[in-house]
Image 1 (cartoon, helix red, strand yellow):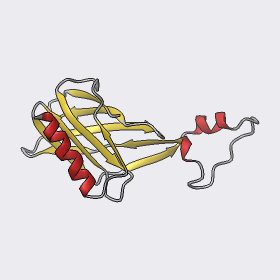
Image 2 (cartoon, rainbow, N blue to C red):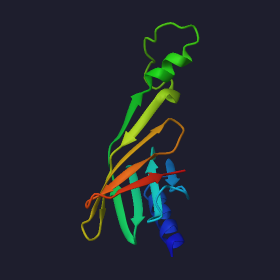
Image 3 (cartoon, rainbow, N blue to C red):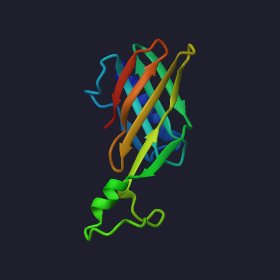
Image 4 (spheres, rainbow, N blue to C red):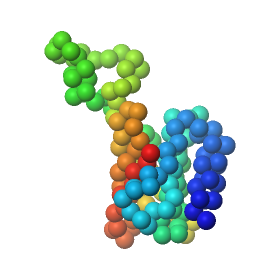
Amino acid sequence: MNTVFAIVGLAALTLTGCAGHTHALAPASGNPSVTVGTFSHEGRGAPAMLLEVEGRRFTAQDFAIRRNANRSALQQHDSRGRRHSGISAGSDTEHYDYSANPELRAEDGAVLRCTLTWPARQAPAGYCDMEEGTRIAVRFE
């Protein structure tokens, strides 16, 4: 049954134009109560996230993804030891860190507030807080 939900979720994200980067929930994500999960970004459509927690489906779409330059990686990259003066926009995407704070909602009105971060070329990871205070670790592949 969970496989069916995952396939339907991925198909819906792909059909809406979000085929940029879709990450599936890692098998050892950190919490067995989370059975299905996807995170999509950088496609033609808006960012989207889906989690199934304890049988309830939570979804979010069109949330902000922030991009910040990783200054320490930039300084390590400069092999001559010069002080880094900046990289022209878009010329070196290897030195960015990304973050997002999607607020996922279930059909019954329940809310998951998530905090995810990831370096360039890696998958998002972080946690989601349930309304009653339970924190759920999530990691995508």
